[in-house]
Image (cartoon, rainbow, N blue to C red; front, side, top):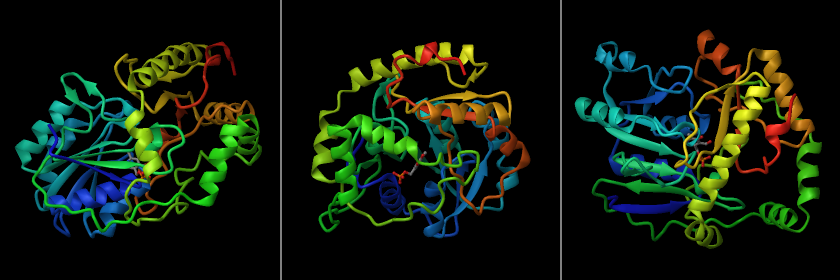
Amino acid sequence: MIKNLLNFNNVRSALSVGIDILQIPKDSYVLVPEIICDVAVKVFIRKKIKITFYKLDKYFQPVWRELENLKTLKNKKISAILMVHFFGYPQNIRNFRKFSKKNDIYLIEDNCHSLNIPINQTILGYNGHIGIDSPRKIIKDLYSGGRLFINTKSNIITKNIPRYIPTKIQKFKKNLKKKNPKLSEYIKFSKKRPNYESPYFFSDKDNDFSIKKTDLLSLQKIRKFNFKKEIDKRYKYLLKLSKFAKKNNLEIVFKKNKNILPMHFVAITRNNSHRKKILNWGWRNKIDIVTWPSFYKEKKLSQVLLRRWNKYICIPLNQNLSDIDEKRI
Ligand SMILES: Cc1ncc(COP(=O)(O)O)c(C=O)c1O
């Protein structure tokens, strides 16, 4: 069982505090998957911790034989490994734990694409020395919410950390969504579609790293969140999206699972133009279809990785997808 759970404004805050609790030394290296959003990388870089990216296969699993071959890294001081449950589909937790134990390094469990749900005799987010998750990405209409699960001893005092205050724009958007959801949707999709084809499409938009506690309204919503109902709903969507994938020549990346709370459905398109067609179709039909992540700009992306990344599409499961199975693009 975890020793402590802290609620912050977002995950970068939770991760930042977690790194301080573990006392990860400056100039040591953290093993981070090669596909990860820029914000997560920046948290380490800002603390002068170095990053070594580890390879993933096409299904977002680590290439273990390369990771095991730490000989290539023997001159570097490695302090931790980040395990990411991509899109909310659990990684092989046992392998990561073994790896962390064998190499005597910290395991950081990034569960930002799901929540702390029970699965295979464990709870997602509770398996590392620290874990992080992101209610604000999963639960509708939260103003803030990023959590830190602590499995080691810590004397952290959060009394002096200020609480997050929702902005006027956030309040306005939430009100509009509630009172006039059609107009809110219209406004969203009447803009120019973000350039999802760029691996840096979201960079520099949100560079606030100030540490706050979750606002009280969001905290209440997190506590009341009906996991079971949401898991069932998302599973139904996954079934529909399997049919949609078949109709539209998409390869499904993750197996369906009745017990998880995924953030996205992920599929591989045939090529760049197939992907573009699907992204455009989604925007025209007011269905959110996106790419992930927006990479850290300073990371040199290999051609192999880029070629693979250029084919992925992600469909967020927090939208209404009730008739998606009937759609052909
Ligand atoms: C896997 C993962 N970890 C961490 C983060 C950082 O989350 P936040 O924006 O709440 O700081 C993200 C953001 O997209 C993410 O996808």
